[in-house]
Image (cartoon, rainbow, N blue to C red; front, top):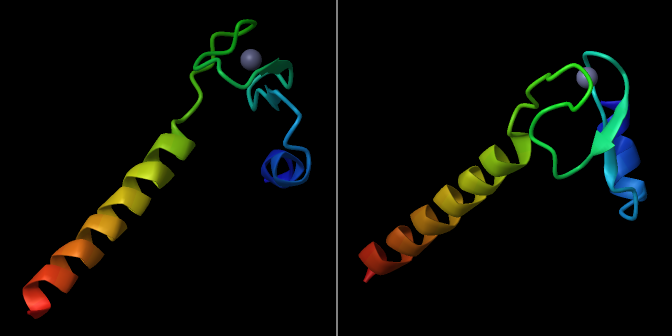
Length: 65
Ligand SMILES: [Zn+2]
């Protein structure tokens, strides 16, 4: 959670902390280069949720008329 808050305030920070070995790895990495921990795709999930919400609103707007 602390890493998430840090990301919000430091957008220039291009690294994330591995929860398995506590090493700094590139933000783009899907897997830790040190211990091969697989990062959960949280951002992708959030984006999918946002798109689902937008689509639902569009469908609701269309079906209103
Ligand atoms: Zn690691």
